[in-house]
Image (cartoon, rainbow over all chains, first blue to last red):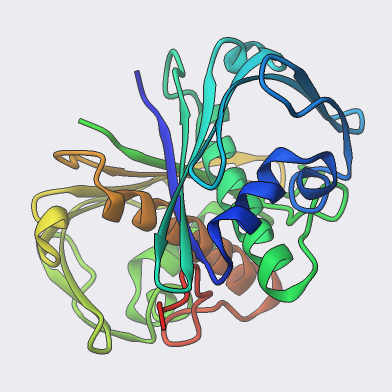
Length: 148
Length: 148
């Protein structure tokens, strides 16, 4: 099964990156400003993107400063049952985020779109932690214009 | 074998996008400003990124407004023998670029990095064609800071 893979290096401590992935305040600073729910293990986080999309993730595993693992339980059909994994690795004053959105059934055109979109959101996470402001929905980078 | 997949939608005609993928001037406007060689079928294009990286691609197939396919013949060892594919699909006044960097032997950490980096270069391609200026090397977006 094809996976979406990404990596960014962020000038921040592993626990700082971890907090941005495991608190509603942190998540709403880089993915979508409309984030609610509970980010603890076995709980569900609700991510909303206006009329465009909704994603509910169940938190499967958390290891402070090391790992965040979610399962998608409600979203676009292609996402349901997929897992979203953030592994953190420290190198000096940089924390690398190894990102994997795994378990896609097929390399659909929508998967191509989501891969590019995830990259821009990880760049948003880096900007949040290094510069103090990310670009979460609805201020996210547009990678496809609408056809006229 | 894992692939890197991306998609961007660009407000431009398929042939305009095609030209940005098949001329030295176009390629130097979004991937690296140090692009030389010959972008015709069976020829080799040389992409240089200062001391950081070199990529030579052989042009395997060109279909105007539809497809660009390269094989990597010299680069980082992980890239040699991989193929880079751009498929163009028109929808109204938008041209979608379906991008695939295929034939990686393993989902290495470097592959994660390259996936994110490709996304930023495709956003650069979109900016070049929609706004008149891309962000090719050495003005490319930095996705990893150097460890101190």
